[in-house]
Every structure is written in structure tokens, then in C-alpha cells.
Image (cartoon, rainbow, N blue to C red; front, side, top):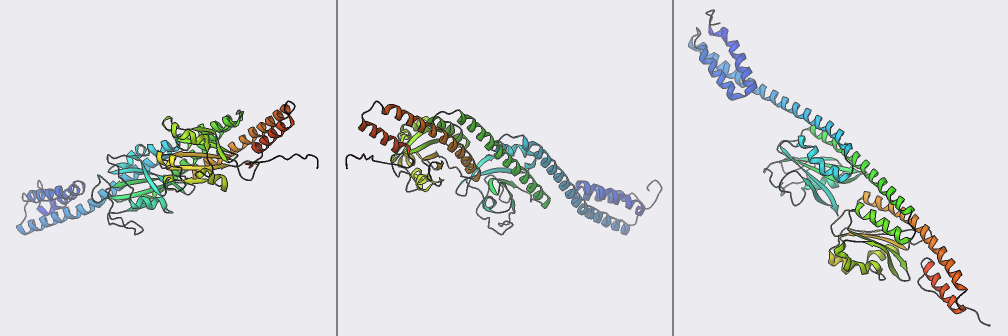
Length: 449
């Protein structure tokens, strides 16, 4: 336009285009500089002062409007990139999740697996530890919080799977969030809690903390990811249960006596349930006698006497025997019937599980497991106990029946070498020991009238 000796009004559209493009790409600051530069360039053209002033106002207005449009375009572009990244992470997660061999490994690797999702945010993994409490399993930050937030507690107990909150001190359901702040986080943060469930039971809660609000599309992706991880956790639980039952069944098939049966069960069951110690008791003549027990070396001096013989009405073991129902405790030290020795050692999680056999309505064998740390008795742990109890019951029936036959055959053989009154005593002792539920007995012999 300048070479053609035209007026400034003919160069104005090109200046507006240049100003608008620069503003929409680089922001208002660069746009204002472009507008002022264009106004100075228009001085070179033939223009009267009033037209020059009007063109300057038009250029500034172009910069402002282009900044508004460019800002929305940049925001939309950034959101589109973030959504594409989230979708990519979601697809990668669906590919990686099936590779994990057990549930704990999967939960511990989630922060690393979702690292791309954590740009500008933080991930905490909480797992139930009994009585509605949560324990931090994995933390991608440096300072773990002492307790979960109210939103995480809501995700643990609520029916939904994805919960979110904003810095406006209320979550999406109106519950107050005042008084909790993530250590190391800014005074204002956005929180997202994702519940991972197996058969409607929450097994973990993922807590995301970030500076930006979670959009609806992101929450939908989180929901789908939570469903995929939950299905994989359920699959891993079923797989672990099948593996455990196959190992136990294989070992019990070759066990020749009840002590070996009990020891094999404890060897596999204690680590599977994350317990420290365990014992299997059999009721005989007013006391619980230990068939087998396993415990840490430092606990043996104080626990071995209890494992050998548990006196009458002592602790949850007798409650399980008398009621025929399993007794679970996540705060054992607070129970009035707690055994002083276990309470002094700090045992908190304990279960007394009756083993039912077909020879009596009330089982004579009780499985006891305990740990000094709090362990939640979840549905998955109870399923493991039920499956192993059935195998234990079947194996005990077999070896106890063999023991019965051996005892009777031995009694018949020895009867020929004893006087009659000693034979009576041996018969009575065998009857009291072998007849289910008997504590004492007498044998009467008719003499004369």
C-alpha cells in the first residue's frame, strides 16, 4: 500500500490481521505491542490526524477482541490436549492393568502407572484397615497426611464410585470440607476420590489432589478407569483364591495325621491373610489342645503355652466353639474377654473360626489367627477363610476317621493282654476321647443281681 502511495485506510485491514494473529497466539501483551507498532507504521502513510486516531482505536479494539477469542481457543486447545492425554493414559492403563500378578502389587504401582495423569496433581492410595479406617498404602508426595480427608471417607462408605470437591469448602453432596488440607498442598486445591470395589465392597480409594478443577469428561474417564481396575482386582482376588485352595488341597491330600493337616493349613493361610500367628485347636476333655501352631520367633516363649493348651472359657476361641459361629475382631485389646497374654503383646486383629465336621453338630476344631497390626476383615478375606475351612474340614474328617479305626483296632488287640478291669478302663478312656463332645464318662458292669 505504501509503495502504491495509497492512504493509511487501505493498510488498516492488513495491520488488523497482523495484530489479531499476534494477539490470539501470544496474548494481550504482544497484541498491544503489535497494535502500537501498527499505529506508528501508519504514520508513514498519507492520513489526517483524526483518521489516524480512529485507526489506532480500531487496532486496539482488534487486539482486545482477538485476545478474548484467542484465550478461549487456547483454553479449548489445552483442554483437547489434556483430554487426548487422559484418553491415552486410560487406554494404556487398560493394557497395563492385566499384567499385575496380585492385588497389592497393582495398588502399589498405580501412582507410577498413572504418572502421566499426575501433571500438576498428586495421588494418594488409601486401603481399609478395619472399623471404617483407612491407611495410606502409597504416596507420590514427600509428606503423607496423618488421616484421610472427609471426601475420601465418603468414597469409602458411599454408594458412588467417583467423588469430587472444589475449594468452596463443600463437596458435590454438600458435605463440609473445612479443617482438612493436604500437607504440602496450596491453600486452595481440587480433590477427586475414586473408590475401587470388589463385589460392592471398597478395597481401596484413590485420592487425586490438583490445582485445576476436574471437568466432566475427566470424571467420566476416571469412572471408567475405576471400573476397569475394580474388575481386574476382582479377577486377581479370584485367581489368588483358586491358587491358594489348589496348593492347600494338594498338601492336605498327602497329610497322614491331624497335626500335619493343621500345620499345612497354617503355613499357607497365615501369609495369605497377612497374619502374624495362628493355631488350630481341638476340643478334648474340657480344654482346647493345639494340633499345630505357627508364630514369630520372638513371640514363642509367651504364646507356646497357650497354643499347647487353652483353658476352659478362655477368649474368643471358646466363644467360637460354643456358638459355632466365627468371631472376628479388629480391636482385640479393647474386648473384655481378651486373653491377657495376647493383649500385653499388642494383638489387635484376631479371628476364631470353627471348623465344622459331619461327626457333630458343633465342631470340635477351631482355627485361630491373629496379628498385632490392624487388618480389616473384608469379604475377600472371609471368602479365603471359608474356602480353606472346607478343605480343612474334609481333610480332618479323613484323618480323624483313620485315627478312630486305628485306635479301635489297637484297643481290640491290646484287650487280650489286659485283665478285665484294665480293659474296661481302656475302653472308657477311648470312648471319652473319641466320642464327639464328651468330657467325662463311666462304665458300669453288672455283677450278680
